[in-house]
Image (cartoon, rainbow, N blue to C red; front, side, top):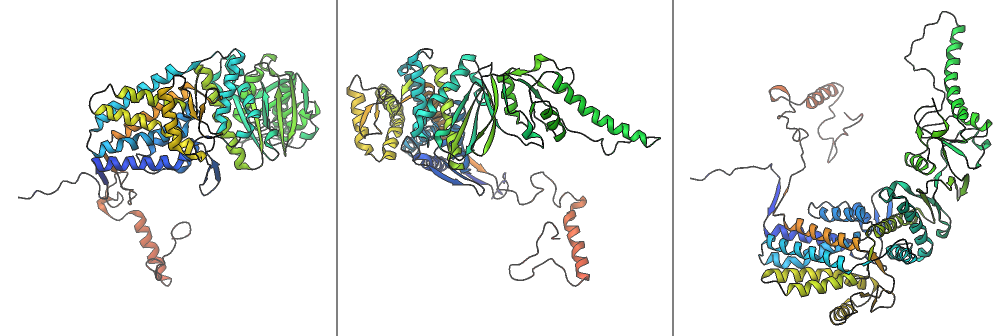
Amino acid sequence: MMRPGIILLREGTDTSQGKAQLVSNINACQAVADAVRTTLGPRGMDKLIFDGRKVTISNDGATIMKLLEIAHPAAKTLVDISMSQDAEVGDGTTSVVLLAGEILKQLKPFVEEGVHPQIIMRNIRSAGKLAVQKVQELCVPFDTSTPEGSEMLLKCCSTALNSKLIASHQDLFSPMIVDAVKSLHEAGSLDDLDSLIAIKRIPGGDVRQSFLVKGGVAFKKTFSYAGFEQMTKKFDHPKVLLLNVELELKSEKENAEVRIEDPSQYQSIVDAEWQVIYDKLDACVDCGANIVLSKLPIGDLATQYFADRGLFCAGRVEDGDLKRVAKATGGTIQTSTNDMFEGVLGTCGGFEEKRVGDERFNVFADCPAKLTSTIVLRGGSEQFIAESERSIHDALMVVKRALKSRAVVAGGGAVEMEVSRFLREHALTIEGKGQLIVSAFAKALEVVPRQLCDNAGFDSTDILSSLRRKHTHDDDGKWYGVDIANGGICDTFNSGVWEPSDNKANSYASSTEAACVILSIDETVINPRSQDPGAATGMPPGGGMPGGGKPLSNMMGGAMDAANAQKGGSRSGNLGQGVSYMKGRGGG
């Protein structure tokens, strides 16, 4: 007797399992890796991505992955590891995706030949752990307080900028970035880097006109009212008052009820409203402030009042900028103008409103707390400046990571080749299938130097064989990598191509983990997008109408059709070949 099939999943659900779907997931990850492959290294190409609203030109792996909006559920894992590398280290986002894709590519033959995924995962996890340990052994420690340590930070910063659009301006940006991050490090606030170092963009001018406001804050002039131009725009050692208070004349609420017996009493109500704002303004002046900044609007009355008394004011200051000013000047943001005293005021060496390009900037310089810095970027086009900002953010993160790890390794594929050699030798000590799997992992690491060669237009086969020979036979060959400038191989450590050791360690750990996640999936279930709006909420058929009747919308539609029929014809149904009336606003 035939038994009826049991249906567990909704109609249209796509399920795939077994070896075929695992290979399919690996292929999807390879396609993602191929999308960013050509952006790796100093000779990497840029990608232009248009999302329907704005154009982005970038070769930053994390930015590209974010903008691609990858739909494949398994391939999204590579987007996640790219984001985590960006958040953790800031640089190496492309290489981490490439490594994960290459590890999966090298392991695909084992999957197709029926090796159990758990055996593969166990071995690549141990290989990944060994790779991270090897990086820790290879790294060269340094002391950041010495001149040699500062030179090391500059080299790390320059290496991060090498593959960016502003690579030719390293001499300008590297010292800026190192100065900004070192000032945070000395104050012990490295973890607040994103909130304390601001990057401001001003289109126009030349890239070389970019500058750093060290130990200070700069932000764009905010919206201003009449009387603003009469204000004092320059102070030495000013006192700064920071408010989260609205300094505007506010009329009584519309629904307020005030009963008066005499029309003259109405004037006293109006006077009281004015008195409230004047009391606030007097309190700001009496506390001894020269500059008043507020997150909320400062109206025309307040602007004129402060201008007459030689004060400077700015309203609608962005939250991030106001907090940076508070940190730099030592002031406290006030939520009320009552009981203010001199202790809540901040101070700085000098304040000036400067003109930069077409914009005017409020610059607080020589602040007592040397925590905050602002990098002002100039450039020809909006896309160029946006990419410059991403590049500088990456370099800031790299210098931060170098200060934390206090150890560097050589770049240019040297570390990958050395770790690959070590794993190949280690694989020979393993019995069984593990030997082949660890060897495949070792081969996957060579994707970085190979791709660096391909992107620079060199013959990767020749260069890789030279590197293998150098790393295997020569005692001093451990730091040999790809010579991007001349082709061939060179000692990249002596050439000053340095990266924080944490960068590589995090990259190997993340790519190994991503490969394990993909290999551990044995079934993919994709639910269909619901056509019935009530399906997702579990409503009964008929839109939840009692007795399974018609939904309310259908009943309303029927009533409309009946009304229209009396006026000369219903609008529902077909009006002609492929034509139907619009639904929506005013459309029935």
